[in-house]
Length: 84
Image (tube, rainbow, N blue to C red; front, side):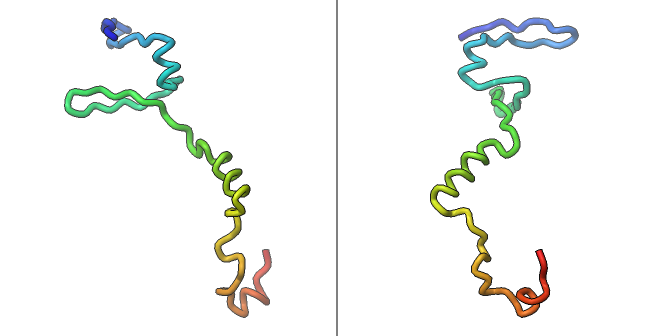
């Protein structure tokens, strides 16, 4: 696909068709990187994206317990004095 570079105020830009934006999952904010004269535009992933699905899968596989749940490393102080 070819497109023209257009003037946008004092800058220049390109127009991306709606179908390209949808196909690449580009929304309001993107990351732009230049390497060896190649421009790469990619969507910005939101922080903690997909965590809900991952935690649900962990619970389904019963892999969502605390690592120190068995308390074998707890000291006497941990067992008698510590309060949650």
